[in-house]
Image 1 (tube, rainbow, N blue to C red):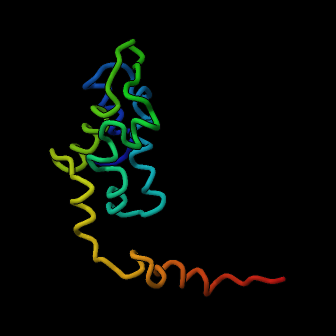
Image 2 (cartoon, rainbow, N blue to C red; image 1 turned 90 degrees about the vertical axis):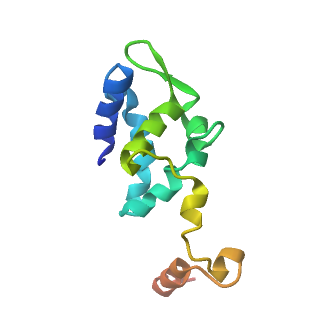
Amino acid sequence: MAKPWVHAVSSARRFGGDAEDYLEIHNHLDATKSAFADNRHRAITHNAWYIGPGGPLEIAFGVTVTNSDGKRISVRTIAEQHIMEDFGGFIPTLQDFLCEMEYKPWMNGQGEPPSRSKCMKRVTVSD
């Protein structure tokens, strides 16, 4: 699936109400696109931990939202729908993503991440 609006329309079809009732949640799930433009952005928000009970999504939106039809919908259920549409019917775990990353020494506090050395070369500090 593509843009948050497409997910919001899909949510309205499934849960009732208007697409606008769901757009903020779908925008939130895809907000990481602005930091990393390919689908690896999904590692941050498109996983079972992020949308799980007491996870960051519920902290941001609460456990339920009330749509314009007055129906309470689980935020987790909305997110599950979004992620399953993106992944063709399954919800990856955070472990699924992290196990695919190559472990680097800087991740354990040894050395610096690539962004630091690139940024430090461009920054000039004057007194």
